[in-house]
Length: 193
Image 1 (cartoon, rainbow, N blue to C red):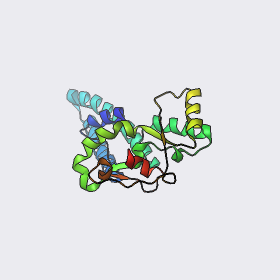
Image 2: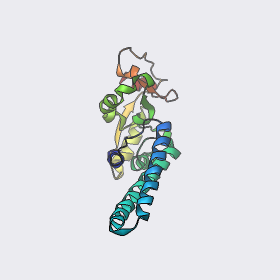
Image 3: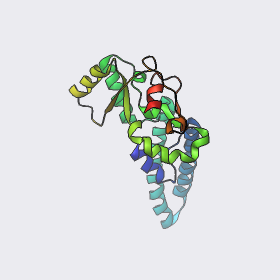
Image 4: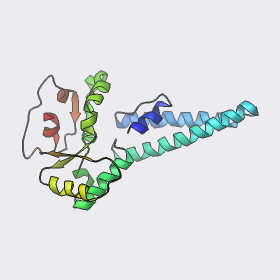
């Protein structure tokens, strides 16, 4: 995610917060790519230098476009390598990848609180990188991760589900400022965190 954010920053862009923002970013990157192609077509010494820069930008835009397409197709904001690790764990223990969600997939800053998005994202970043595991499957998942080379960081979070406990979201809290996926069985746990 950090690498993706740095690559986007080269174009004056930030990581999108919603599916609509993803589409807008993809459109903007297509415009950048088209502009780079026009630069490459120019003639002369200056054009040659511009062509080299445009080719480099084309490559970077191509990488970003590929990642954006993957994000759009998956419906997730999780980087590809992290998603692959989670899928491997799920297959290894007989669960579906959606049974092991990253917290970051389940939350976003609510519309009226968008001005706080950067601060909230910084505050919740460590939590967002955790894979939630139902208490019933935690030991099995933990053992699989322990026994296998995961080729990257995996942070598991034992979590109870809505069927195990219920909680009211207290007013005036960060939990009130974020939207938690209504379909997740971990909704109450996230709100409590």
